[in-house]
Amino acid sequence: MSWSEFYIIVSGLITLVLLIIAFPWLRNKNHAKQDSLTNTQIVKQRLAELDREVTEGLISEHDKRQAVDELKLALVDESAFQSHKTGNATLPLAVGGVLAIVCGVIVYSQVNQMEGVVRANKAIETLPELSQQLANGNANNLTQQDIASLALAIRQRLREEPEDDTGWMYFGRLMLSIGQEVQAIEAIDRAVKLAPSNSANRITLAQALMTTGDVNNLERAQSILLSLLSENPQNDNLALMMAVVSAQLGDLDNTRRFYKQVEGKLPRDSDMAQRLVARIQELEGNTNEVVGLQDTEQPLAASGKDKTSGEETGFNVTVNLSEEARENAPREGFLIVFAQDANSGNKMPAAVVKLPINSFPISVALTTDNAMMPQFTLATLSDVIVTARLSEDRDVAVSQGEWQGSVNASVTINELSSLSIIIDKEL
Image 1 (cartoon, helix red, strand yellow):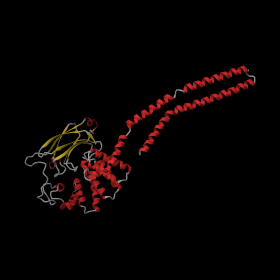
Image 2 (tube, one colour; image 1 turned 180 degrees about the vertical axis):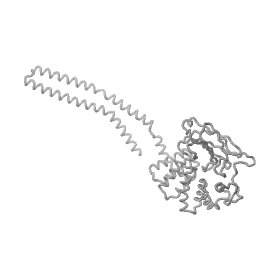
Image 3 (spheres, helix red, strand yellow; image 1 turned 180 degrees about the horizontal axis):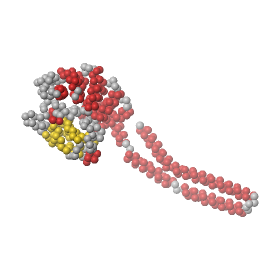
Image 4 (cartoon, rainbow, N blue to C red; image 1 turned 90 degrees about the horizontal axis):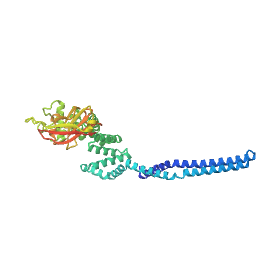
């Protein structure tokens, strides 16, 4: 809606209010004129009847004059009454009109969204600058306000051009960069539906699905990657992604097959290669020996437990609820406590503990023994984000209505550090 359309609509509404206020007064005035005309006609008719009655000898001339005088007096009294009754309506109507306009302005100033409109226009003006900054790889320099402005501007553009698949892709990537996986997947999915032949969009969708860790999303990502590999079987990036998602799903055949395709092209000290080798060993039920997929002399990531000291690496986490969470958070389901790498975009938990929701506060030991993959544990990380989440299911992926709290912490090898987490945020 343009500003000119806005002003026209507001002017029309003000005019309508004024007409509603003035209508009863105009109606009464017209009724008064009509009543006056009607009374005059009645007097004329009565005078004609008096003349007829005199002619017919029913009344005398003296009686006629007396009746005429009474009619004239009645007409004068009625005219004076009507003039007195309608003469003081202007001031109340004027005061009422002014009060109505003032009240309308006050109410509008309280409930209008002008601040949001101004913010949206400003966001659209800064869109080219922020987009260029994002395209140049300077996303880390963007403040929270910049990200909010960029998201708002893109949504405004998408509202005007809902069929713009590039806009939906930009919005999805922006949401993914700030950890909003659900919104990111919805936006990227929309871009894929608008441009199904664009393989880059489908790759981005697969990447977004893989970040959630949800089994259904991982299966969907695997299906997308299989389709892309059928079109371009020599693409090593797709093969590596396929090996990773298959490893997460426990699909040994596909993990082996696609890791073999990229095995010789990964650096010998690649952390990803070590994790895939360890996962393949785990799926084969042979985690104690290093087998043909990697050089036996290649050093593996450090174990989470020092074999000589017997000490564990991890955290003793005390979880409690805020007052708001005590009232509104789920009372049945699971408490999920997990740790993620704070220094990378890898969303896979390095350790996860799931317990039935019980009374709070509650203490949980989160250690290397709770790793999802043997070669990706708390001992391999330096800084982590530890999250406690109340969920109605056992899934680490975010669902609507869940509550969580998070803290940042540093990992100390061979030590169980103490942490406190307050669950205070609704997702």
